[in-house]
Structures are given as C-alpha cells and as structure tokens.
Amino acid sequence: MTNPLIGFQIAPAELSYIGHDLERPECILAEQDGTLWSADGRGGVMRIDPDGTQALILQKGTEANTASSFEDRLVNTTGSLPNGLTFDANGDFLIANFGTDRVERMTRDGETSVVIDNVDGRPFGKANFVTRDTKGRLWLTVTTTMNPWTEHVKTNSRDGYIALIDERGARIVADDLCGTNELRFDANEDWLYVAETTSRNITRFRVDGDTLKDREIYGPTVLPGFCDGIALDTYGNLWTTLIMADQLVAITPEGDVLTILDAGGDPAALARLDEAWRKGQVTPEIMQACGGPQCRWMASLTFGGPDLKTVYLGSLQGTTIPYFRSPVAGLPLIYWNA
Image (cartoon, rainbow, N blue to C red; front, side, top):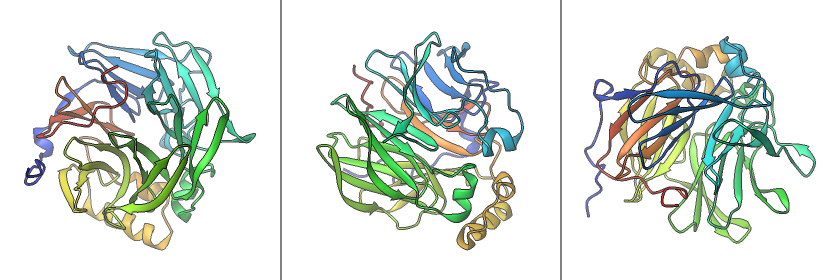
C-alpha cells in the first residue's frame, strides 16, 4: 500500500475554520458526534458544537485568568492555563495545567479538583500534557522546571521528564528530556512517542510494564522546527506541528519528513529564531516575531470527524480552529470507541 500522504499538501487558503474569540486553544479534543472541546487560556475549556455554537466552561474554584499581555499570558504563564487535555473514563477532563503546574480534573460543568501536584514531594514544574492508557494509568510530561519556561528555551536545558501516575502516586520514568511536550502511544501501547520540543526531535521508548526502555530518536535527529503536538495515523505516519514555524509535517515509517501545511509568517523572523536557537540566545521577543495569521504558534493537531479524517489545529495565539480533510484516518485515541 502506498503511503496516502505521499504528494498530499494543503495550502493555507484551503483551510476551513470553526470557533471564534478563543483564547490560547492549545489542545483540542474531538468527539464522535462532532463536538469539539478546546483548552482555553481564561482558565477552562470551550465547547464548540458542530453548528458552531460555543460555550466557555470556566474552572470553578480556580480564579479566571485575566492576563492579556504576551509577557504574562505566554511567558510568565500567569494564572490557570489549561494545556494538555484528555478525557477520563467518566468523560470528564484531565488537564495538564501549564499555569498552576499540576494535573487537574474538571467536570463538564466546571467543578475542578487537583489530581496531583508533585512527584516525590517536589512540585512538578511546567505540566504540559497528560494522557491515560488502557490500564487506567496517567502519563504526564513536564516541559521544564524553569520559570519562566523561556529560560529553558534559551539554554536548551534537559530538565524535562515523563511521570507515570497511578494509585501509588507519581514517579519519574524518563528524564534528561529537552522541552518535553505531547506524547502518544502506538495502537498496541508497545511504544510511547514524545516530542522534545527544544531539541527539535521526536523520541520514543518501548513500554515494559511500569518502565520505559530502548530510548531512541524517531526520524530525523533534528527537525526543521520546534516540534510540539504529535499524532499517529492508521498508516503509521507520525504527524507533528512545528510551533512558531507554523508548519505541519509528518514523519513516515521510513523516517522521511513530508510537509503537509506551511502557514508560516515572516521567513526572516524565523531565520533569526533558528540562528538564536543554534547559539543558545532565544528570547521571548525573537519568538514573538514568528508565526503566520492562520494558526499563530501552531501547537497541536487532533483527528476527528466520524471517519477520523478531519484534522483540527490548535495554537497558542490563534482565536479560531483551522481544519482540513486528510487522505488517511488518525489512530483512534483511547476514549474514541469507549
């Protein structure tokens, strides 16, 4: 079978959009009936119905985030900033909160409780993404223990890690990671893939019970941008967003990189960012100058639609959700057929 992504590209002008007036729609969950749930930087989740009707559900007991400046919202991560989302077994939300540095549970009417906020008695750091496996365990990525997190980007510090959370609490199962971001399992949960955003590569581990083994870089040693969100399709391609470059690419099973979408902005600004990254001199100002208008700071992708062939794109600075049709279905996430 020929890889369905060979020769496939989508132009920015071909994108469709859903949602409006969103705040930091970093992560998106799609349900089979077409309902979308988007993380919202005001401290909650936005529900978007298939007809475009939407409703913001704020976390109760957590102060709403009113920060409006780039510095407070995206650098200092002031207040509650829901980042990675997944559904728990009851259909409520599990939230990796990049602002409060913890894992939270939020019901669909906003009731919020803390699941866990430490590992071995120490604060997590910047909690980025959370998912669960078929054994009922949670897997959490922590990007960095530096605050603000932009200091990590400047130094390329390798203080990120993956924590496994079960009835015994949280414990680190992989460390020495550089900007740990989204993680995904393959279909059989044999392999765990994770984006190391700041070293610009995808790493994978073989899952062996409660441990991660056989660590290796998957695909290119260095990708052409900061990989952020990742997802697998049913053919075996691994898709990833390149934040600030605002590109969507896929790594084929053979290790080749295919560009699906290029929605980037000023090439000169991106060149300055790349040069600063190589020199260890990245600043918030250099990052802020990057990004295009369609999906500024493209941060995630989600497969949805009844056939899992609709791709929704999340972002840190967008106010709407771009989407398009894919020639190949996404790998169903754990909740899809529940």
